[in-house]
Length: 452
Image 1 (cartoon, rainbow, N blue to C red):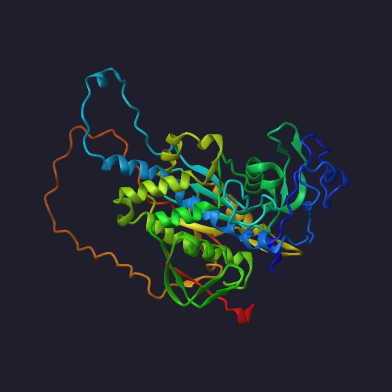
Image 2 (image 1 turned 90 degrees about the vertical axis):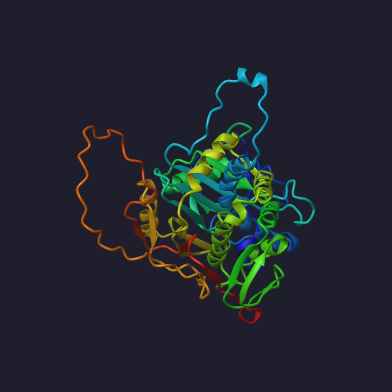
């Protein structure tokens, strides 16, 4: 079974330790661990003991969590706005006159960065996910919304990527040590959601004021609420680890089938976590298209179900607890053209025991995000292929030269109002990175048992 599903998270003592960076677990950290003695310790560049078969099988469920929330955040706001517009005119009460003006919620001022974490925690998720074996952020995604709301980027950070981890505050007091090199998926178990945010901030240079952790049951709830998500399969998918067996063609997935599709790693691409990210992007781009379709946005029942499914399966930072904030972020997202929503794999190369950032392309990606530049990807999708049955894109009609007309009379008092801002992105920054846009129709590249 793949090493990528192994559990290796450890929390240190709450007392402040020396901040010397180390590449091995000290006896002191083991001694003061909050985890039980049966839980394997944090490893630096090392192969760890495999978790139990039951826990390992469900570990990959976390692959689905952040995928749901990327769309789910906008759904919460869009649902509230659309449901409000669907309500019939009410009855005017005499005492309403005493109320002050109700503030109108608009799109968030400027851009926003939201970190989206998919946890493998079983807390509050029922008995169907195996025994507790840690708390890893098996999926970590950064949603970056441009200042002018003309584009958005979703950056996926591979779970096995080695990165420096900064000092992290312990909610119970004290500070967790910095570490020079550790897999990014250990940060949630090491210092909580705040530690994952600090790690990504250090890696990218961005300030991230919003964050959310998404729970297991969100995948089933949201895929059911939207009525299923259509996905395309190019070659047959076979995966005994997730009981996923899909023939070539289109499949509308909901409930457990959606979970299995997002969990599969052995059944797609080369069996790595990187091609699993590509498989998730096939699902996510289709989910975004489904949510933004007229069939969803004009259906109050679906909208309410989506909003409830999203909120019921999230742990939010304090900054996202206010519904007005969620709605304002959603309003910034809801009008962005699908072709300007880009899903990107953070550029990495192989190293012993995992992957590590590729210096130049990673720096270029960070610079584009810091400069608020929209992204155009020059790399491939990372594992998926183009959907041969994708809807044809209509070419814009040719414009004819207008007939000569009399010049209009000059306006004696030209308007001094500033022109309305446009939603067209500025020139895009080309990046050598893998991924796709939400407007691209892609198919998962399957992998049969014979190739595993």
